Image (cartoon, rainbow, N blue to C red):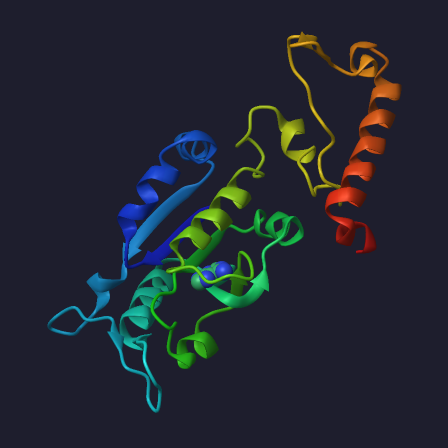
Length: 225
Ligand code: ADE
């Protein structure tokens, strides 16, 4: 998969994409991530990328020219499955949509700033707007990182143990069951006996039961869906 990120702050991505699973996926050639500084595409002599909205009060908008030129340049070289825009009023990201996006070959993510982008870019370029939650961030970079991380980790080969992505919370519509590791007894607190039994069928049943109990308690909405 190739991911092109259009941003005013390309340096923000160096940390999150330089570690852990995303880094490993890049090193293995499973994903290619390219950041593009929007300012480089501005034809304004001061490299301005924002302006006041018509008939608006307070706040600035990202101007259409640098965004359109940047996307046009990218589209010249390849076709894109989706051009994402980070926006609090976009479709809420969940495991379902993340699973779908992990099949894409090429995507663009445009990171929003200020009061957002000129509506004509939304109409003529953006194919999907997404939100990471009902709260407002100071920019779309963190949302873009979350989309990339959640998508990349489920691309086959990104995680060493293939099963582990499949047993994530939400993959079967439930949150994950409780999990334990060594030692068996920690400060007098025991690991549930069933997990030490070696009876795989019984263990799977127990895990499912626990996942249902936990989902009912913590995220009952998932069961209604
Ligand atoms: N930009 C600002 N807030 C956002 C959110 N909640 N999700 C995605 N992009 C955003």
